[in-house]
Amino acid sequence: MANYNEQVIRAWDEWEDQTGNDANDPDDFIDWAIANNRLYTPLEDVRKIHRRRVSEALRQVHRVDEAGTTYRAKQCVTILEEGRQRTLVFDVDKNGTPQLRQKAVRQRRDAIANDVYRAMSDVAHMNFAYPHDDPIQFELDFTEDYEERKALEEMERSAKKAG
Image (cartoon, rainbow, N blue to C red; front, side, top):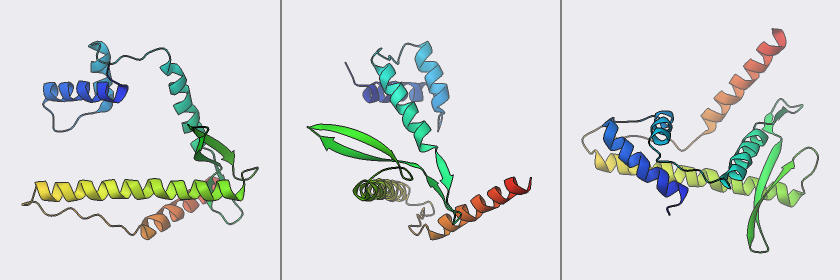
């Protein structure tokens, strides 16, 4: 039996062919897949669903420090322990060793670098596949993006205090 990702990809390709659309909404796909018995969720996957939801909830815990920086209070690191990969979550204000904090930052940076690599590869392919279109540019300097988001966050925080 196919793993879940393989199952989704096969069903998506079938559905994509049926719709004939240039782009599709995953919510519409899920409706179709459930109605047509194309997705199966074994009972043991309930644990995975809870794990994903717990992880999402923990990622949403934000705090603001005295300097006005909003940060994620719950950080995670992935470790290998006795041949098993585990994810550990810690509160940066209450616990977590310097090694855990450094490892969390390093793993986060690696994840971002992987995302940037994948995005650059996607852009390179699209530019190759459509040579007559204007080339798509992908700016690697995110300093301006950071500053814009920081300013917006500060404005929203000030508006909440005033309102």
